[in-house]
Image 1 (tube, rainbow, N blue to C red):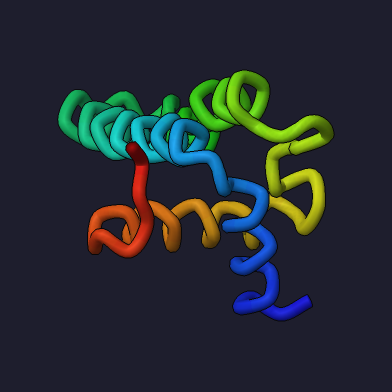
Image 2: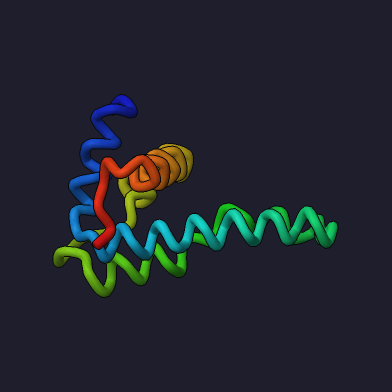
Length: 100
């Protein structure tokens, strides 16, 4: 599956605005966490940066997702899921997707 197809499926899997909101919050927390790691020079925390979003994302799927709705990394792999996470984040910032 190519990335445009995957992203369409990804958005279908994130159709609930509250689920998207939790992903969006998680991405902001990831950004601030990364800034903190760099500012305080806690380099040993770098491996945790990609994982910061997951408590928010998994909570969004558990609380607001459809039955059987699972985080996207279980379907297509970690790197494509991460890319789709950021695409959705920027689509929300641009106003293309609603989180309310």
